[in-house]
Image (cartoon, rainbow, N blue to C red; front, side, top):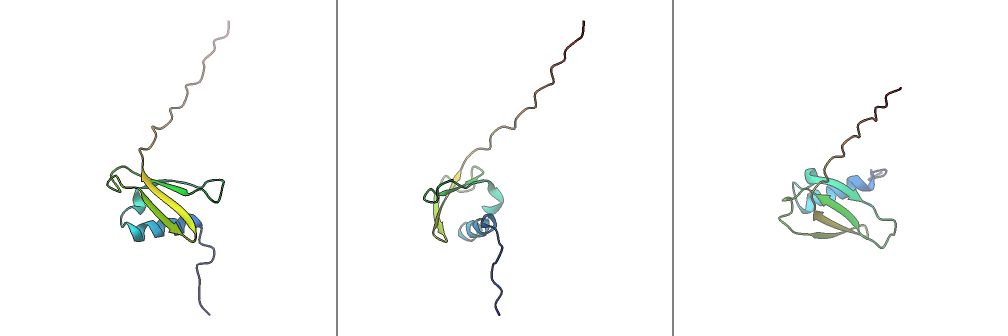
Length: 87
């Protein structure tokens, strides 16, 4: 009886696959976007400088994966509560 990779989420498989192709880039991933349509590629975004400006196009289990560099968006600021005085 062989033990397979049953129950391993697609995100984990993508991260392992990217690490095999480009060592060290797994820790630079900050977003994985899964499109609504199966024919659209899965987009993996890494921190700038991780790929030296390249865009990787990979195929995993028949799904197209595009790995690209992009800046993280600035964190949202919380709105200060409106203070209303009673008269």
